[in-house]
Every structure is written in structure tokens, then in C-alpha cells.
Image (tube, rainbow, N blue to C red):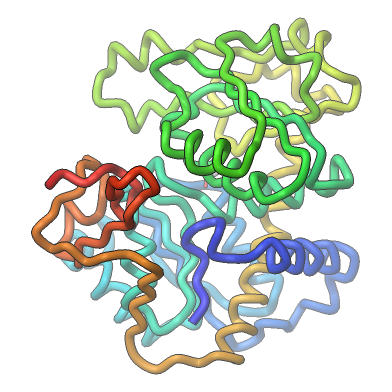
Length: 362
Ligand code: CP
């Protein structure tokens, strides 16, 4: 059974296939109107969402399928203490495919271990957001005509920004990618991504603290919101929340064909008067999210039909089980629910948690 939990669960060729399907859907909407007739998507959203949940819903409706689920865990039996594992076992009786968003990192991975239908990670804590990445890739492809030979600046909250983590992983598999990280010291990209994704794949990567010094060289500026909900210290959030603001004055320094992306929601990091600049692609990006989720649902259901699996299918890929170890991640599902403790060894002889990538606490 194929799931989409992390960007790298699908090969570059498969990503390209999903993007091609999305482009075909855009060109021939009517061809897909009944492509998933009789199929049901369950949207299990334990954390707030506008775009992801509703674009999944809209995507399944446009494919002729139907949707069930919850948008507030408090209204489900989760509020009575039901685990992720049991919830997906139950949903597998009602639905053909599941999209899950959770504040606990690794919850969708746990779900995939116990689900008999495909599970899609719709965002887990600060960890990953692979369907936003597919959205971003489709947008880049449509706006720039390519996914290689690009200089992309990631700006804002690179520590908690799960969309940034997933997109860097995805782009690191293409040729000629240059990454510029624009963030205050406190919100820098997690070091494991810099080391194990950028450095390992020989992606030229630079860290800067101002937008001005790099704007003229960027093909893409990927703005992010400073994520209030992830901070433990409100004072720190207040100090950092206005770190980077993109406005028309700053846009004057950018290339005429640079595009501005943002996973949204935005707060104040892009001023309203940038919206009418043709380089502001973030609302076009939202619509691409629906098309690419249509392509993803269609593809995963097709793969599931080709490879049906009965029963539970733990999908260990080189991880080791050490139930006497503990993950150091405060938002890790393994510290919230009774799950097998899974770790993978790193090249420097350490172990990191398979659910959230935090270091092991032995
Ligand atoms: N981009 C994104 O994940 O938006 P939502 O939180 O509204 O789903």
C-alpha cells in the first residue's frame, strides 16, 4: 500500500507523473469528472486548516467522489482518548483514502502503519507538508516552466515552517537548485535539513539575515508566516513576528520575472499592495493545490487498486525499534501516544526519531 507521508515517499519520476496528471486535469476537467465515482475520502483534521482541507474536499468532489471526516478533533472520539492507530483502523471501514492533519509530528506515519487504505499527510506539526510541496512544484512548473536551474529564497520562519522543510527536500532532487535561507538566528532551518538534505546533495546553500541583499538574484521568493502556534515563549514570538515584510518598495529590487510564493495563510509578512503585482503567485498557487490533490487522490487510488493489501502493513524502511529509548521532540507523536519507538541511524553515528526527526534521548 502506497502512502504519502514524506515528500521522498514518491520518486522524482512519480512526482513528475502526478504533475503531468494535474496539468491534464487542468486541460481536460470533464475527463476526470467521474474518475473517483463511488470512492470516499476521509479528511481527519486535528488542527485548523482552510486551504488544505477544503482543497482536498473540492478535489474529491470534482473527481466525482464523496468526502467524510472531521475538522475539529474535539467533535470526534479523539476527545475520549482514541488513538491515531484506532481512528484509522475505524476509518478504513468507511473510506477508501485518508488525508490527515495533526499537530503531533509523525501522527500520519503512525496512521500509515495501521491503515488499510492510503494515508496522505496533510501537515504534521512543524515536520512536513508534502501536499503543499506538490502544490508548490506544480506552481513553479506552471509559472517558471521548469523545476531545475532555479535560485529560491526561503524567507521567515524556517524553523517551524513545515512547507519549507518539505519543499527543500523535494527540490534537492533536481539539477541546478540554489537555496538562500533568509531568517533570523532564532528561526533558522533545522540543522539536520541543512546537513542531510542540502549539503548531502551538494545544493549550494547560503544563510542571510536580510532580504535586500539577495532579492535581485532570486527566481523564486518563498515567504512564510512566523508560526505563533509553535512558540513556547510569547515574548519571543512578539520579538520575531515582524522580522521580514515584503512590500512594493522591496519588490522593486527583484527580477521582473521573479515569482512570490507563500503557502498561506499570511498575516502581515506580505503587504496587501503586493497582491496586484503580477509576480505575486500565491493565490494562483492555492488553485494549483486543488488540481494537484485531484491528481494525487486519483494516483494513490489507482496504485491501491493495483497493489491491494489486506490487514495492517507496518512499513519500516531501515528504522530500528527501541522501545526503551525516548524521542527528544516535544511535539512528537511517540511522546503522546503508545506507539513503537522507531529510530533511524544517521551518518554521524547518532539516531533520530522516525516520526519527527528529533534526536534520541537515551
Ligand atoms: N497552506 C496550508 O496548509 O494552509 P491551511 O493551513 O489553510 O490548510
